[in-house]
Image 1 (spheres, helix red, strand yellow):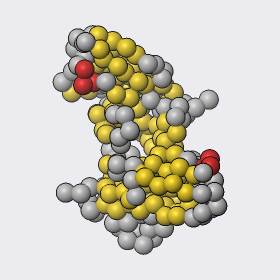
Image 2 (spheres, rainbow over the protein chains, first blue to last red):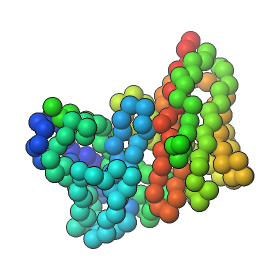
Image 3 (tube, each protein chain N blue to C red):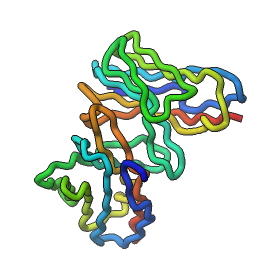
Image 4 (tube, rainbow over the protein chains, first blue to last red):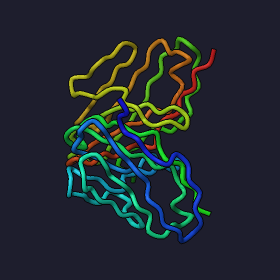
Length: 113
Length: 108
């Protein structure tokens, strides 16, 4: 039972490059979300989705795009990487909504040089 | 002011000690509350939900005071394996807000 799978686990980018962080879940969860975690800041919500075809912004959406074409996948795109986006990124899912306990992926550690 | 505030610690306690963490939230519309545990360089994992009546799971007790907008977590008989960061989480209209976490270190 894979749960929530994030790829890659580690990535180093140069400023200005773009990339996509992948997130997939095999639990048929409707709700999926992306967070970034920085020292002393806790986890902050970037974008979330309540079902296929529906996405919305969280607390810190600037510089990131998402799409939800299937229930299983929720990729996060960095359009033009900046050093301020150096962080640990977590994807999470839950059956119904954000009011439910979340299942987290292992995280992606991203460094922007 | 942060929407969810926790004392970041660190708390350093001996094995067998009782330790309590507090969390305050500013959004009175918050609907659900949780404590998550996060080990170093790992993903957060649900420790327990927090109910208005208070709830207990083994050595862990969680309390919610809606009037004071305050959540607590009590750990009794601390174990070395309890060393981790404890995250307070509040939800409102489907969005989760995390506190910055409280670091606990249990030593022999």
